[in-house]
Amino acid sequence: MKLTDALVYCMSKPGAREDYPFGPEPLVVKVGTKIFAFLWQNESHAGLSLKCEPETAYLLRQQYAAVKPGYHLNKRHWNSVTLDGTIPDEEIRAMIDESYALVVRGLTRAEKEALAALQP
Image 1 (cartoon, rainbow, N blue to C red):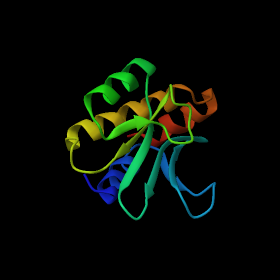
Image 2 (image 1 turned 60 degrees about the vertical axis):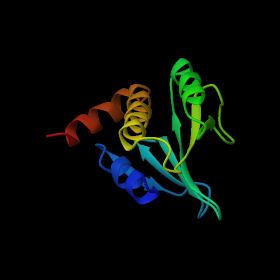
Image 3 (image 1 turned 120 degrees about the vertical axis):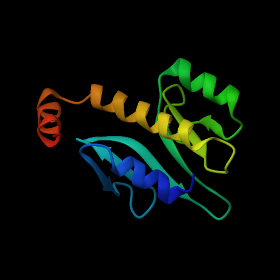
């Protein structure tokens, strides 16, 4: 998966919006007031950091060399995923889905109600 494809998929989530709270890098994708994805690009590769259940985070790190503990994030709950072509696109989409779902679960009641109003 390419970084642009990952961004398009993140932005397809209900209520998703781009933000740059730390300056021009990294791009973050939020739902409500919470971040569910960090997208980054450097000289050698691109990737994203996603929230994850601790057990799942550990298993993904064991399964894929391109999955590491979250860079500058809580390493128990975040993974950084290098988009180097070694992880199937379906798996990356599943990681994005889980991150989004975990963040939505933690939204305030008002944010959840606003999100529900967006859905058809």
